[in-house]
Image (cartoon, rainbow, N blue to C red; front, side):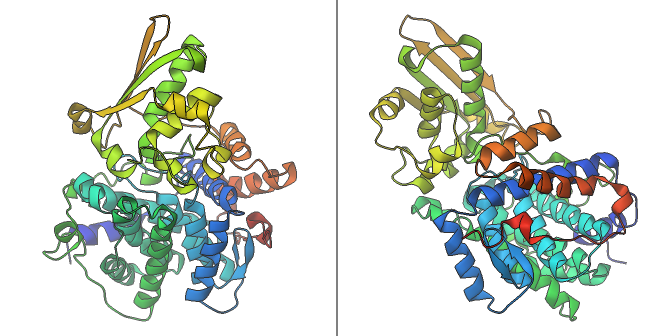
Length: 459
């Protein structure tokens, strides 16, 4: 019997399918589903969403029954590709501190596309999504910060997670599931160079390709093709070749802990998650002291260095860069009292008031903050007013982290805020559908993937 870390991880996935799902995990799964629909709906009408649908159809032509956000139904691989891309466009899909990736788009997108093509039970869908989170987050955490500085872990660890989600959805036995993960790992890629070169519009292709490759890996394993068994720990595996420096024990230890799904972060702001703690700190100071933008003389933001390696745009030149500009989002929050979807999609980049306020913001980094990354994301914001008063706030964790979570009602309100065009009836339909995953009594019932949930034919 094989005792590699990868084999233990696969055995863990098989074991999860045989034991009852804890009620807390069921409820967290319902939240993850609602977050996924929020992310997809918020971006469905964007021109970039249309481009992603076109790419999906060109890569996987042919009819199908799997719904797509804002478009017509496609075949399962094309729908999974499109929905993963669209769900990532707004940068509001869930995240994870230690794994430094977005697990929902790579875990849920392939499963719901496959579920639309077959009568899949609630329990099968739940097991598959849980498996996607389990693998992508464990692999991402093991790869660590050095990897995440050069590679987008949603694309690398995400490809393995998508293979796990698709493999469980297809009902692969343990040996084939192991092969699926190994095949998916050989296709793991996603370079941060696209950010350095200003190609932010293509960032959503990272989860899309991860999902495409994960699905293909599961299909390949189902017909008997073998995959790399030591895809992480082998001498030419992911850890060795993709600059891994995290704890390899993340793969196969703490298997009795709550499923990794429970450790994901639901995002409070419509921008890169690296920028959340300074926004949270700024919001805290605004709420506590009630100053106006005109009273602000200077703002100092100190943050962990990794944040600016990913979100280092000094001032955005186009909407796609707004989510990666610390000075822009903080200035917008101070000026408008909020950071909304319109601030990212239709930003007033030449607004003199916002530009003047941004000119008062100084950003620096602190190596001590970096030493506790990624378990914490420290940022200190200090605001000095024109009358000489000075206020400071330190945030190490983010609103929406497991330690400071949203509840179900807050998530519903979040969806309406992120998707202002959504009407009451549709909002109830989506939330009721997602809430069904918290009901153990539905385990054997088939999941109906209703096209209305996706805004079919919106374009």
